[in-house]
Image 1 (cartoon, one colour):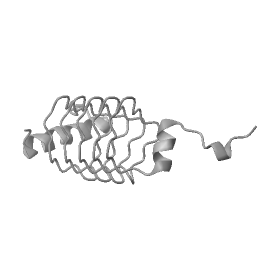
Image 2 (spheres, rainbow, N blue to C red; image 1 turned 180 degrees about the horizontal axis):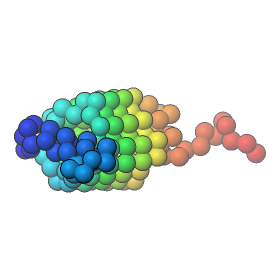
Image 3 (spheres, rainbow, N blue to C red; image 1 turned 60 degrees about the vertical axis):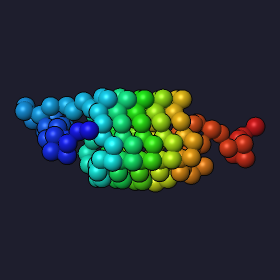
Image 4 (cartoon, helix red, strand yellow; image 1 turned 30 degrees about the horizontal axis):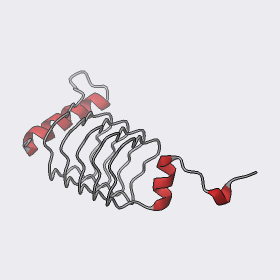
Length: 138
């Protein structure tokens, strides 16, 4: 499991990278064990979390725009209020994740496991691109 100190250091360098500072480094957390990590309200834009273990992670209000979370284990993660614009969640395990207040505009959930995830039907329909038959025009 990654230590809080190491994670904080990586995210500090990532914050510099987001600002365009020369000593900044884009974070890459593929396959990282971030079980139970407290990432509340963090700016995590553009980080690769491919196949990372984020079980029970606290990602409330986190900005995950443009992140790669393909194949990530997000079972039981709290994503309430998280920004997930254009996030790749393909093949992610979201069983039991809390997504009710998450912004999923443009998210890719191809083959993601949403069994038991807490998400509003209208939000799920939007991310899936479903059309409300009551609103169809002939």
